[in-house]
Amino acid sequence: MSSIAVVGAGFAGMSAAARLAKLGHDVIVFDSAAQAGGRLNGISIDGVVWQPSAMTVTLPGVFRDLFRKSGRVMTAALDIFPAEPRRHIFLGSRTPLTFALPTGTRSAQHDVMAEVFGRDPWSGWLDSFDNEWDIARRFIYEVLTTEDDIVALEGRLQLDKSAYRLAHKALKHRQLEALALDRWRLHGFDPKKVPGTWHMWHYVERNFGLWRFDGDMDGLAQALIKRLAERKVEIRTSTPVLGVHMKFGRVIGIQTEDEVWESDFVVWASGHQLPGLFDENPQRTTRVYTGIELDGYDLGQSLFVHGNHLMQVWDSGPQRWVAQTHKGTDVGRLLKKIGVPNESLVSIDRLPPLEREQQPAVISGSGLNLDLKSKSRGNSASFADLIARPAFSPAPGLYVVGGSAVADSSLELTGMGTAAVAEEIGAVPRQVSLG
Image (tube, rainbow, N blue to C red; front, side, top):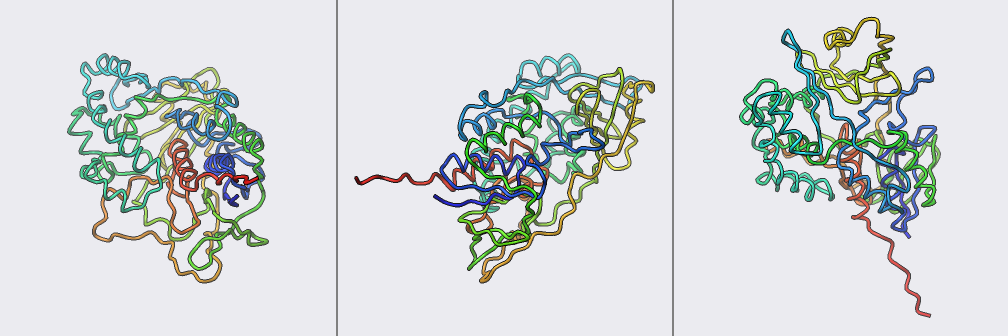
C-alpha cells in the first residue's frame, strides 16, 4: 500500500483522493480551509452564498466515470440532468438580438442558426473540430503530458492559426464571430493571440450538452465528501500546507506549519502555487464578479451578453445571479440595456476576488538536484504553450492537477486530469497468499 498526500480539498483534490483510495492506496487530504469543498462551496457573504462559477458542466461522462471508478455509480450518490439552453443577447443595434442556443444536439443548433441568421455556417464549422477533440482528449487531457508531447501534436491540431483567424474565415458574420470569440475575450484573452484549437470547446458543448447536478455545486461537494468517507479517506481541514519536501530530486512528502508529512506520492491540487510551475501568462484583462438580486424578473440559468461590454451571468440561488465582466463594466447599465426594469433591481454588489491571498509555496529538504521550473523553449514557443495540460508530473513523486495545473481549470478538465493521475499511479498490487 502506498501513502499519498493530496493537497487541496476542492473538486480536484477530492476527485483524485476518491479514485486513488479505490485503487487501494492510503490517502490523506490536507486543506487550509475549515471545510472541504473549495470553490464548490461558493462565497458566503452575510449568510448569503454566491456561486463563483457557472452552475453548468459539459462532458457528463467525466463525472459518471469518477463515481463509478471510486465505488458506486453516480446515480447512487448524485443525479445529473440537462440544463436550460444558454441565452445570448447581442447589443449594438436599436433592437437587441436574442436567442437561446440549445446544446447536446447538432440538429437543434442548426435549426436555431438557420432561423436566426438565415443560414448556418456554424454547424459545419464545429464539425471540423471532431478529429481535433478526439486527439486532444486521448493524447493530452486523459493522460499525463509534457510540453514536448503537445509540441509533437502540433501537426495534428490547429495550432498554426489563431482563434480569430479560424472564426473570421469560416463564419463571415459579425455576430456569429462574436458568438465564437467573446468567451475568450471575456476571460481576458486576445483572440488573435490564442490557438484556434480552443474552439473545440464549442464543439464539446454542442455534442455533449450542458448539465446540472442535483443540489448544484454544493450537491457535488457533499456527494464527494460522502464518497471519501465511504473510502475511509481522512480530510484534514484547517491544515495549511506550505509546500513539498524533497530528497535527492524526488518529492517525498509535504511541509505543513508543524511538520514534514512523508508520503510515497504527493498530488498537488491546491490553488497555492508551487514556484516555477508556470511560465509567464499572456496579458489578461482583470475580471470582476458581481452579485445581483432581482425581484419579479428572471435572468434564467445561463446568459451571455455580447457587445462593447461583455457579461456572462449564471443563477446563484432564488432570485440571485452572479455576473462576470471586465473591470470597469457598469453592470447596472447593462442590465437596463437588456430589459431589466429598475423596480426589479434589489441589489448589485461587487463580490470579493476569488483568488485567496497566499504566500508562494516552498520547496524544502536536501539534495534538491531537480529544478521544478517548466522548461522554456525560448523562440520555439508557439500556440502549443496555451494548450491546457490538466495533469503533469514536474518531479518524481509529484503530480499536479486542477487550478494548479491549469489556471481557471474547468471541472471537466480537472476530472480528466485526476483520472490520468490515478491511471499513472495505478492500483496497489494484490497480495497473493502462498498458503
